[in-house]
Length: 254
Image: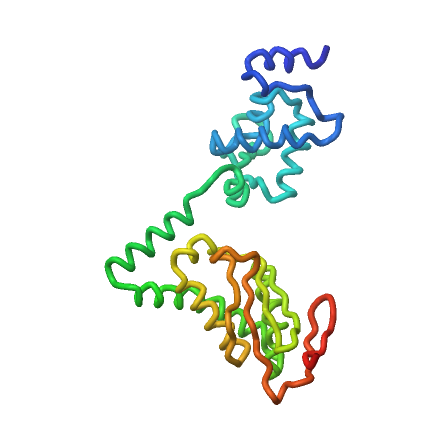
């Protein structure tokens, strides 16, 4: 009988939104999806407002909001001075990461359009200069993180792979009969690079400078391959050396 107020509120909700109070049950991902959709629509809401809209008890809404906070999907700010006694109410808002997962975005389209504009106004060389400027910051971060990697190109490739993985490229370095390979399993600009290969060319030049030797791109995600693969040819001075990755250590003189 204590939940009769909740039952009355359920009658006002759209079909498919109302559900039983999950406070005493197991976590319900669908409920959190509804909270996310509500926050996206309203821009922000207090726990009480979310609870009233979705027909959840205070205990139920707190549990779900705490889970969303822990997952980094929600953040909070003060709602201002309280009307009565007590602390100001908190307004819950979606984080940027959560917003990105809520729907499609046109960032790739905008980036491609911007590069087309640059090419039309200033020529292809301007696009190449833009690409070089974009990877310069990445090169600086990688170079700083690779200090102490030594002069062996294969060892430097392994160190570079670790840095690129931290940057979100999911990279690894492996040995092959003719030297080594640096593989990147994710490309954050693949769709744009498919139209503007200058982005891949600038990145390849950075890899060459960081490793300290000539390298050759064998495949790119932008061109439809599953992995961006960069070949690192072995030199006479490094014949028979070993390269280690996170799974194994392999000789390169096979």
